[in-house]
Length: 402
Picture (cartoon, rainbow, N blue to C red):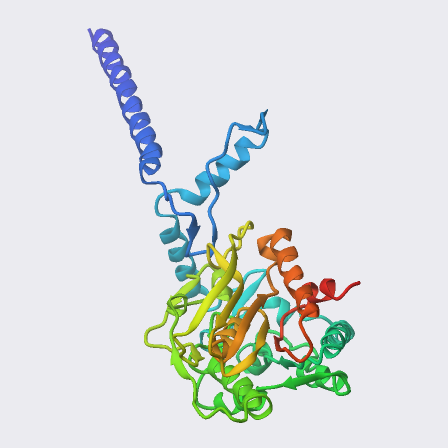
């Protein structure tokens, strides 16, 4: 009798255990498939400031895609539901536990200031720094020589290094390596060239006593302080040398794409890459309704370190009744577009050429190299060139080659 009860009980448990297992298998499948109905369809992630992986194709160029598995894994890892919230929560938790955040690329110093290791703890040796400055000087001299043959003046605007100005916020975490002042060295090397060096460092050091000239999580000059000082400095110099009869003053402007600033260092640490700023006038400009944009060229970044999905790298405009019957040429990184916007309403033609564009591919580089070469065909005494300091002058170097 007892044996019969035991067998019935065993059969009951076995039957229900199968149902129990099927139930949990069903829950697991539903749990795994549910995020697929909420997959992120955006092209970029603002949290990490990069392009998201696309759904892979089974065939590429008529052949089986042998990397389909890896590409599918990258697609799923980039787009599963709640990913940005998970990353943000992870870094917030780590920061609260450790009180300090770092990875192989960047770290957080005092007062929330963030720094890249390549410019602090991994800064090149003095010899490497000197080699780079001397190489930059040779490129700039050769560039200026070509322009001088057409009697075209060139102004070179320096940008003080953020990691040096704000060293007090990171020096307790790492021993600072020797630093060769780029501004002082390049000014010395260009002393006998045809280049006028413009250095806003003194003005920025003065402003630092009351305000931040850089953003805490970005290597960009702050909107209403550092960037405004940068523009005011070149404006003062040009007004003295090129525009002595100019009586009016520029007015603050806020472009649509400047309502946010790019926190590119913060992005390397997993924080949001775009930070909203309210009521900040990032630029200066002379307002002239007769200015017309005639040409522009934009590219979408092909690599997965995107700051914005599409960016203009070349602009050209015209004013029908200008104050100066010449061409203004502004060359450099993103700051140089601010120089273009500042002076574009004063000159007959205005050209902006961006040179830190390797992330957009070789086609973009070749396009702007061709635009730099066109400057050598300008008529004598018909233009001025304003060059903003950048990490390197690769495109200029290629353009000046015979």
